Amino acid sequence: MSSTLRRLAPLFLLLGLASCTQPAPAATYTIEMYDNYFRPVELHFPTADVVRLKVVNHGKLIHNFEVDIRGHKGIVAGPGGDNVTTLLTPPPGRYPFACSVPGHQGMQGVIVIDP
Ligand SMILES: [Cu+2]
Image (cartoon, rainbow, N blue to C red; front, side, top):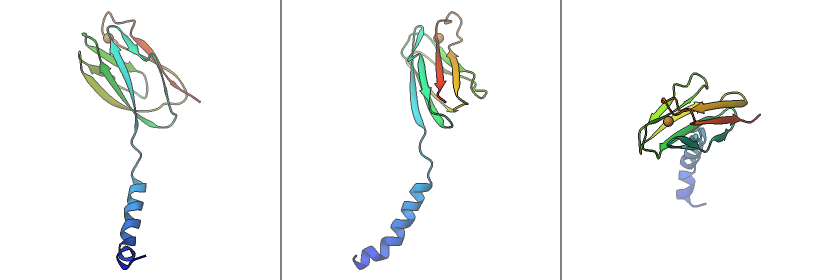
């Protein structure tokens, strides 16, 4: 090992330790919105994890995404727009989601947390 490398070794060690303490970025899942359905209609999330959920509206109507997980408030995406939310995944089970815009009753899906 050269003397320069030997002097810099502690720095590399510190940088390595610092990078190990950073939390892993949350995985992002995308749900596409159309007039009037979601795609996919079923998503599987890992247990005990934080996930980023992105909705992308490909329709000509406004849509929202509502799911009863840990008091989530829901998110809205206008025509051609998108939105992102973060969810702490709940215990294993099936969690229906839907668009609550009047007339959009057919927009439904389910988030599945596998045991
Ligand atoms: Cu809708």
